[in-house]
Length: 116
Image: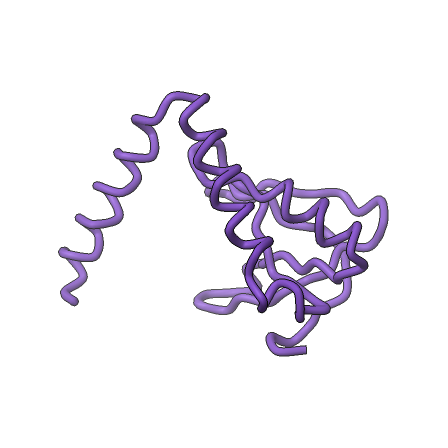
């Protein structure tokens, strides 16, 4: 897919998400989280990767709560450099910092490899 097509698709998707009312966004987030929790992969997983959602994104707090209640390890993405992403399991009490693009990342934690 050409870069301009990809950027156009992203812009259109973002516009559709932003057009949702807070209630519609909450309802969609709940349905998506319920679907994830029903997956056999979720049941088998000892670790999950999540993101801290921006206001227009699918909220993941319910998944994080369920994961912790089920004893799963929860890792969050941290940008470690240009085109470098690492996954971090925050330590208790870890502060979250806002990046230059407004995404919140854990300031400290255990780095984990995907697939662990």
